[in-house]
Picture: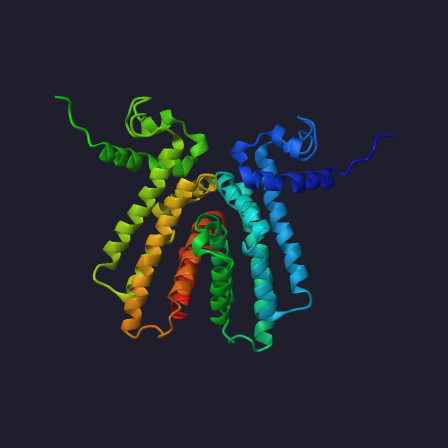
Length: 194
Length: 194
């Protein structure tokens, strides 16, 4: 009998191996051969899993989002309300080398998504997921009396998501003005304004 | 005598003619021939002005920034303080079709800038310019008693710039949650928190 291979698991293994190479060198500068080599595959052996570099980029974006969510839920633990919201935001923000690499994947992905509605939907889905998690934290914070009893959660989530999205760009392209300390000070100001 | 041609003026004319084509179709999908045709030039005639599509993209980014600044100073007029700050932010935000097209140029430019420090410096320079203008408005607002006498201008500018940068992305990729009304509500919240 042929060995049973879990196709999705294999795709995830490949992406876990190659995403940082895409982040460091850029999608334009790496070939399918480079990506196969990074994953320990022979040239051409990625074909059953990915048809193009764009498919790998999309999987790398989803990998970055899922890694963020795993880290966030671990950091949040049993916390609720504003504490949970701050921890969620910290995991989305590019505060360390790993997350700066993830941000490079994210920015590259946006450029491709401009001209591919399916890719745009993948970004929108990540945003919607974070918006829902934020709304949950805000509802907990309101129930606990941590924030004003003022139903502006949509606006609060819009503002946080815009700022977190902007940090991805500015931490890479304006690092001197987007240090971890300054990102965190800005976030603290946004949370205090709630 | 040969006709004297203002090289920089010609470059600006070309960019004014082609930037929207890059925005609509994406840099990858247009050729130097397409760009020349859009500007009314024969194939090859752009070579004295631009050596590559990336050079044209960089000029298109600068064109978007300069157009924003011209619109902003016109909108600001004699206004100062928070009124001026709101008008500046409104001109940076992708609130209409023209500015949504500009945002497409901006997002495409970021992707290239990830791997080109000179291009990153062009983005950083635009951010620094807006930061200075914001600081000026905040100082006026403080002198007029419009905002708290609390020296957190750096943090305020960081937050505004992050949110305005994020809107560029989300207005394109999550338009249902980044309408002009929702962008403006988020901005009003940020200004009210000052």
